[in-house]
Structures are given as C-alpha cells and as structure tokens.
Length: 113
Image (cartoon, rainbow, N blue to C red; front, top):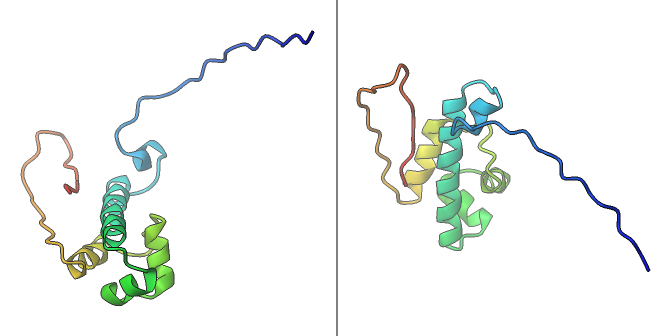
C-alpha cells in the first residue's frame, strides 16, 4: 500500500492591482503603454474577425508581414499611438478622442471598443 505525503498549502502574497499592469510593473509611461495595448488588441480582433492572412493585413495597414505578426502577438513595439489609430482607420474603424475635465489629480487615457 502506497502512502502519499501530506502537502502543506502555501500562502501566496499578492497586491491589489492599480488596473494598469504597466504601472504595477513600474514601467515608464504606463498609461501610454496601456493605451497602445488596447489599440493593438482592437487591431488583432479586426484582423481575426475578417479572417485576414498577415500578408493581406500588411497590405491594408501599409506595413510588412513581420510587423503584422508582432502586432498579432500584442507587441506594438515602435508603433506610436497615432500610428496604431491609423491602422484602425485603415481597417474601416472610426477613432474618436474625447477630452474632458477629470475629478482626479491626474487624468487618464482609455479606449472604448
């Protein structure tokens, strides 16, 4: 008869997220990185929904296939927020920027899809 060792449960310490993983990691320009990530996700969803091959998407976006591949892996790399918004308009999307006063000490950027 085989006996199993009793395993002890270990407590994992965690911290509450700020809602921005880039800020939580202490990366520079976290709001901009979060915005780029959200824009890249929208580009990914549109390309997938249309069943486009990366080369086809590259022609629409005006970039080479390896850059599309990077976008599809949520690697916005050297693309600016402005360039990512241009990709969205090339994919037939309207991009709207709204500026309004904030009640917080600092404003925030967001993408609504």
